[in-house]
Image (cartoon, rainbow, N blue to C red; front, top):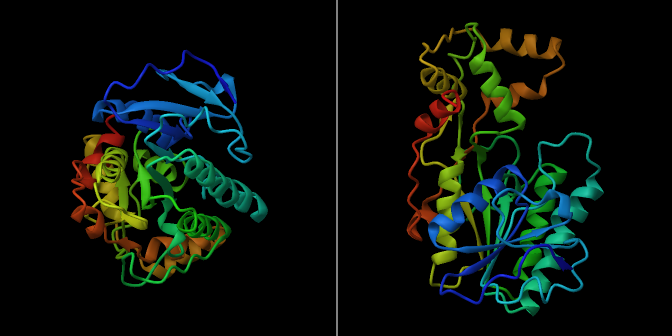
Amino acid sequence: MDEVSARPRKPSGKPLVALTGATGFIGKHLLKELPKCGYRVRVLLRRPAALPEGCPSAVIGDLARPYNMAEALAGVDAVIHTAGLAGTMSGVPEDDYRVFNTEATVSFARAAARARVKRFVFLSSIRAQCGATADGVLTEEREPKPTDAYGHSKLAAEQGLAESGLDWVALRLALVYGPGVQGNMARLVELARSPYPLPLAGLKGRHSLLALDNLSAAVDAVLAAPQVLKRPLIVADPEPLTVGEMIAAMRKGAGRRPGLINVPASVIETALRLRGRADAYQVLFGSLVADPSALVKLGWTPSVATQDGLANLLRT
C-alpha cells in the first residue's frame, strides 16, 4: 500500500481512526464530522484519484486483498468500515455482495486484529436483520432473518467479525437520510418536491429512519464506549413515521402544506402494478420499526428529530 500524503504526525493524544468508504454518502459525512468529535482520521482508499476533499492522510490499497496492511493500520486505535456495495444498487450479482460486503470485511478485520486495532466499527444495515418490512418492533434480541443478498452479506460479515478476535460492533443502520441521499429516500424527496397532491394520507405503516448527524453521533458513542462491545447495535431515530408524515415534514421545510389525500389501498396497489412497481406496495403499506434502546444505554444521544431532519432536506 502507498501513502499519498504526508505521514500522520506523531500521536497528539487524540485517537486515530482509519476510515474506509470516505468517498461515499456516509463516509464523506464521517470524514467531516469525526475531527469535530476529537478524532484524527486516516482514510483508506482504493484509488488515488478518489482522494476526498479535506482528507488529511490517505493510504491506497485493495481492501478485498489486505495482505500488507501493517503500515496502513500502524498506530490506529479504531477502524470505521463503511466501504461496500449498497443495497440500493440494482443488477448486482449475489456473488459480488459476498465478495465485497462479506469476504472483504472479514479479511480487513483479520488484518486489523494483526495490527492490534482496539475496536472495529462495521456499518452494517437493518437489512441484516429483516426484509423491507417487519412485524413488530425490531431489537437486537430478535433472530436475524434477512431476505435478500445484500442483507445476507451484511449478516455474514457480522458473523465473521464475531470470529475475528477483535472488539467489534456492527451498527445496523435504518434507512439513512441527509443531503445527497440516493435510492429510495431520494425518490421520496422527489415526490415531496413535486407540486401535486399525493394519495398517501391513508398509509398506516411506520418506518424508522436515521439522520446523518445522528449516525455520526452513534459512531462517536461506540468509539468512546469503555466496555468491550462485540455485538450488533440497531441505529435509528427514536420516532418512526408514516410515508405521509415524511412527505409532510419535507414539504413543511419548503414552506408548503402537506398536500396529502386519502385514497383506498386497492387503488394504489392497482396503480403500482400498472407501472410495474408492485414491489413498492409492500414497502408503502408495511412497517419497519427499529428500537435503538441498546445504543441509547451506551450514551448515544440523537440530536436531530426526524421531522426536523426531513424538513431540512427541502431547505437545502
